Length: 349
Image (cartoon, rainbow, N blue to C red):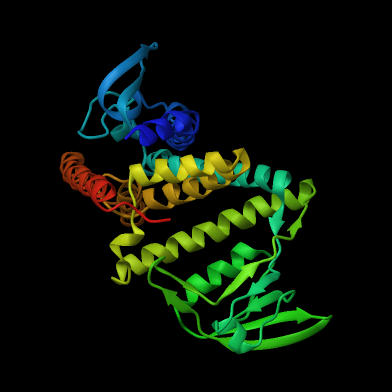
């Protein structure tokens, strides 16, 4: 009991850093909506960080800026968002293109944030080269013929420049065949193997370790790294949602706010650059999650607005409000389930 309390006290600075990093994602997302509301002349009554009871707020000319008790999500409350309004500055009074720009701005801002953070990470640390540091006995890698010092250049016709790209290909393979090309002593060699699943860690492995050799980047390379890493993370995120859609995921793969704070705290302990990297990953995932075409999410609005633009038919504002309300209640129920799952069966890492 005493050791646990001491551990919590020691980790308080890291926990605070983790909460601030998570809050940054929400602030940037909602700031995107807020800025486009202003650009399109939409009245905003509330800008909230967090959910639940109000802790404190600052009242502006027409917008109240709030911080609420639970640091989970946030929102921008627009005039006429949930029901029809006669106010000329209401959300419902705007054209479908104006509405589309407002609802898509949050996800776009998250992707921009990810690019910026990845650029800083690239400039500060560079990236780890895909060079084999060790080969474990009796592993698929050893049986296939991989050796320490091999530089991986291609997997299943996908060019590999970074170690994380190689790890992603192991994830994509899902235990299927991997055709790996490496450079050894300036010669190109090819190998074929299948990853095996580590049941305890719930992931696939081929039995090699990283060498840890890093490539330092100049400004131009850091910028390229920022965009490449954001695109790569987006592809991985879409791939994960694809496994959910096809029912090929485990509950052990899913974590909620508690898991996010735990992992963020561990990232903060590993150093500021590591925390920036994890925050960038989360920013991409938050942006992608929000464009899922589900009521109450930005993606639900995007889907309906694209329908209006394509068909020229205006949707009934009151019906849209009801649909979004139902979607919001479902999301809140799912959030409660995820939080309970986080407490009862936390992610293992």
